[in-house]
Image (cartoon, rainbow, N blue to C red; front, side, top):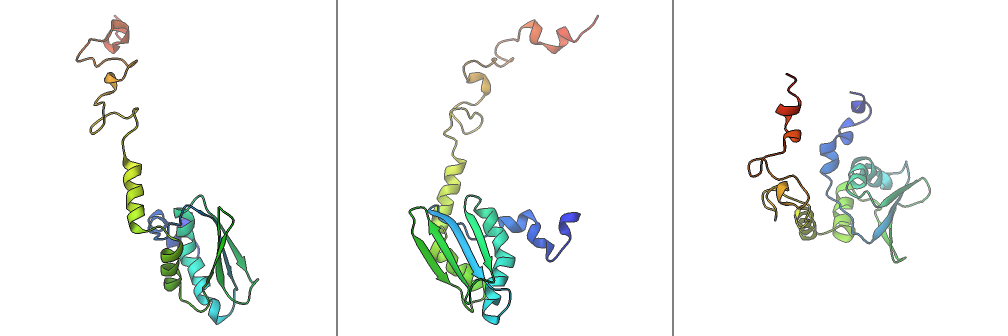
Length: 167
């Protein structure tokens, strides 16, 4: 499998990407991460980008995430909101786990909000839906559809045994 080649191929699996804990708030449009490739106080930021950035990208497809490498003396994360405001988060000399927990607390959606959004996504209020748990139990109840053959027999030209039978 070619996707399992390289450094730490577990990061490319779908299960790993779905396990991300950080879902950003809807108001955030851009997230920029500034760090250096060398230096002891940048090691947490490097590890954070290596391990958690793919998950954040997968969980937040509508957010632009930018990394600036070797441009700053101290690592930081900057969030740009849709109203033009910015938030600066210092991640100097912090391990990757504490950076993630801090971001979840500050710019992430709460667990209650995520549960509410999941329930709202599963709601079946759409009138086009039919089946168990919906307003219409069968497609034949929707106007313009062919009725069930058990209730009203199909016309002969729609039955397979009449037009497929070549005697």
